[in-house]
Amino acid sequence: MTNRRVHTKTAAGILRVIAVDPGLTRCGIAVVDIAANRSAQLVDVTVVGSPGTESIGHRLSVIDRAMDEWLVKYQPDHLAVERMFAQHNTPTVMGTAQASGVAIAAAARKDIPTALLTPSEVKAAVTGSGSADKQQVTAMVTRILNLETPPKPADAADAIAVAIAHAWRGGLFGRGLDTGKLTSPARKSRFENKPANLTPAQKLWLAAEKRAK
Image 1: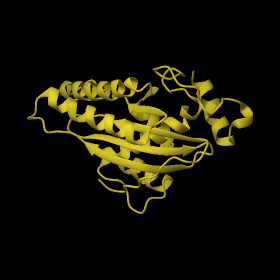
Image 2: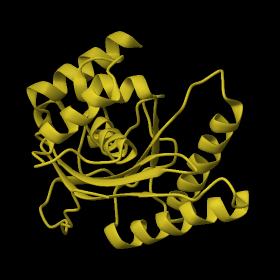
Image 3: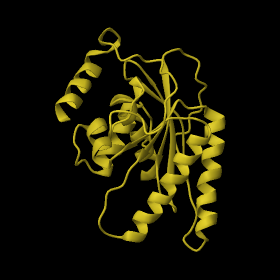
């Protein structure tokens, strides 16, 4: 794990997102603070997991314990989880889905609203291209957060990207990306979806999303 920067959320108008790049062997977990002007600050990032030789119950419990610890420690406003789409390598897809379910359940126990994002949505939000590769995503995450060195491994950078994408493409307004609302009931958002409260960039995002529906 690299680029650990632990901050306490004190400023008003900050959305704290905990994001997960799910996986059983490597599960990236990142906490990012995003202001209404789209500026972002890394709070903390880690990668947890276990080898394939362990039982599935043990592997899921590792992720569950990590999520519980980070949810209590950082008190995020939203959870964002990357959603995998794949037609091949069924065991990997199943493991990813199981890890996602554990993360979502952990947030639900604490009444934290959750949104699901596809990889292409994350790439498009962070780099401007839905087909960007991992190196491009990592480079943009490093630039956006003004980090001295790129976050490693790639799972850490991916989790950070998910957090940024969620806030930039809807999280600031208390809604998710896949259906236009969060997948679980949201507490009242500090960010009201009123034109007067939006930056020009946020207005462009909203206009683009409406055209895409």
